[in-house]
Amino acid sequence: MSSVQVDHLTKSFGELLVLNDISFEVADGEFLCIVGPTGCGKTTFLNSMTGIYEINKGSIQINHEPVNLKKHSLAYIMQEYSTMSWLNVRENVSFGLQIKKLPKKEIEEKTDRALELVGLTQFAKYYPNQLSASMMQRVAIARAFAVEPDLLLMDEPYGQLDLELRFKLEDELLNLWRKMGTTVIFITHNIEEAVYLSERILVLTNKPTTIKENLINPLPYPRKVTDEAFIDLREKVTSLIKWW
Ligand SMILES: Nc1ncnc2c1ncn2[C@@H]1O[C@H](COP(=O)(O)OP(=O)(O)OP(=O)(O)O)[C@@H](O)[C@H]1O
Ligand SMILES: [Mg+2]
Image 1 (spheres, helix red, strand yellow):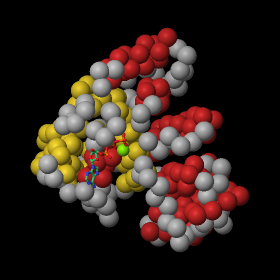
Image 2 (cartoon, rainbow, N blue to C red):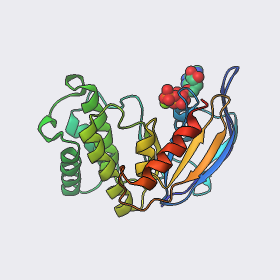
Image 3 (tube, helix red, strand yellow):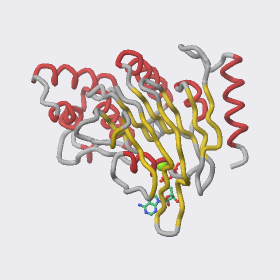
């Protein structure tokens, strides 16, 4: 189980102040979406959390302790494709399971299921350089889902996918979340997607970035994008970001 504490987080690159004294928490098992203008520091936040970037001030913690990638069960689906070019699709997807040293049979089963989920079963032996952008993204999604992490960090994971697959994987993500009690931080530019998925939406400002609004999403699951309450909430979030 994983909760997240972000406390007075400040991150700049040289003179450029990006994240400006940001504080928020994510409860254990919560589904949080983050939306914000391009370049406001959404990816920077996830990169800071996972130790790719060093922060200037403040802290990001999991379960009230410093993030420890060996200890905390965390998967990060990056905005840029993060496949390993020297491994084939199957090896990429099973990578996290191998690290966990699960029994071979369990690794096989979980890998098969994840490959099927993203429609890559027939491409298991392909290497990343033989795949399209959407297929590489699907490899990253399958790898993250396969390990059933306590905390799932997703940076615009579905932007590259066609609509049908996006809808399917949104529902699969909700299934995984419900089944596993995973805590999810999901970044998207797609407001409909944020309203469809999340229990809460953080709306960020332009740089230097602060939290513009912390919006509870009260709609019951399963949601329908055509419901009146859904459309109302979507409009509300849209109007919040109009002033960008
Ligand atoms: N490694 C880096 N070195 C210098 N500047 C950086 C670095 N990474 C990000 N930045 C700058 O920090 C700001 C935030 O970038 P970031 O990629 O986090 O934005 P974002 O909110 O994820 O944008 P998008 O919605 O386009 O993905 C940008 O101005 C970017 O140029
Ligand atoms: Mg980004």
